[in-house]
Image (cartoon, rainbow, N blue to C red; front, top):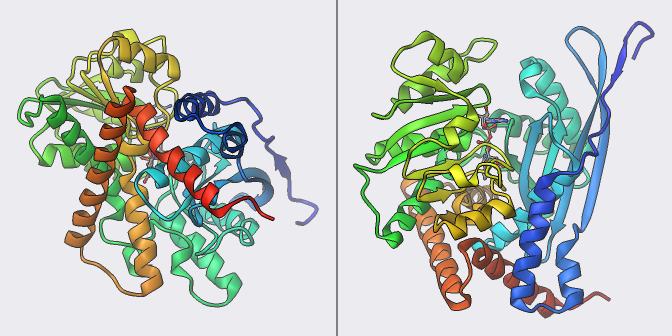
Length: 437
Ligand code: NAD
């Protein structure tokens, strides 16, 4: 760093996160229904280890800016920890703790040999040029190099990151150890060890689970079912595209700028191509609404409350709350995002007879295909897309069965059943392994 460079400091975000409160409340409810021993409950409740990294990045204008990132390993009893890396301005240690805990339960629920982790950097990736994003990613990876590895902790994309981010992470790790290690991250591009089907896996999984829920609720009718999707990133866009392919009508969808609505159904492919144009700033759905007259513009709040049959929150936490839960019109809510529903809203939905298919089941398609990617990398053998989707469906529907069975047996909601099933699996493994020394 030379004398003329300016160092800009961004302070770590210690704001308490509602997401962590939600994750703990969900855990406490499920663990007490299971009647878990108090010490075991305490062990499962706390993250195993937490890291905070403050690191410099050289910006394009020559300034050096300090960033803060986190990685939390919640639990590693079932195997290496697994979980995404998020780039967002609202990232905080508490938020990452919540997301790491949900990863532990998600992996346990779908039967993957993984524990749970999550990471994040406090940054709005839209404020970074491509080269700044690359330097930030490479520096953050090098900060984490001693805590990630194919058998220790395996990152993946999440909000604000994508397959390009994973390529830079894989390359930085590989350059450090001196040989190529594709299995250190998942969600990579296909040409460097990514898996067929990973890009669309989470969204596709959301729709597989939604169809199963519609069947079990006795309201399956793809030609007349109207969907609203919040979020048009990896999860929301692929859920909407796949739903439309299957004949569902997606009547509303949003991104951070707001949403577009057409009661006759939107052309999701057209919206997808519009928002993925390579121009800066990246085009938003609000821009689309300004330039076209085949949609109405709505705010994110209005979107959630629109007339529909299925609501898929696929953006971020804390979207369905006691403020709006009474106004939701959907008969079924399928959680594409992690933690979009607060415990208060959950109670309102239960009273109103609205089924909520919980995040750890509904969006588990992503980590499931990440697991397939990791297996393929370790075996140096790749599967075709038909095999990926066949195995994905098999694993998700088996997990659905387990949740439904638990819900009936214990007379609890799908959320509590899913958490009970998952927590019990980690608790049993902990007892089998015993407490060291
Ligand atoms: P993404 O960054 O690709 O997309 C996020 C979308 O949400 C974008 O359309 C963005 O504009 C929108 N958004 C951001 N802030 C918003 C706000 N304040 N209000 C409304 N919309 C907003 O992220 P993603 O990977 O699609 O992840 C979305 C959610 O799904 C997150 O909760 C993530 O943890 C969860 N998830 C992702 C995966 C995965 O494989 N990517 C897997 C499981 C769960």
